[in-house]
Image (cartoon, rainbow, N blue to C red; front, side, top):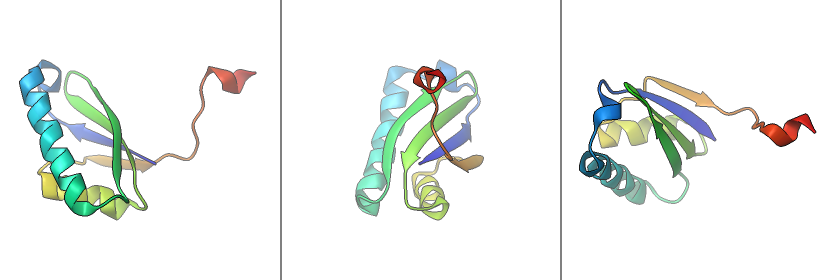
Length: 88
């Protein structure tokens, strides 16, 4: 699993139609790349979009960004996941 940080000035002001277009582009590239890479979800903030992907390696994540025309300013592999149940 990977977390991708994409610096996109004004990301938080993108319209639903613009976000739909970005999503469609991403899904189109993913369909061409095959089932090894999957987009799980993204978080949109004021000037960045943080995306969570399942992929076999960082290179595949960066190739998706290149083919889609998206920035991939930072790609970090998730070491582990914690949540409130971790405290139990």
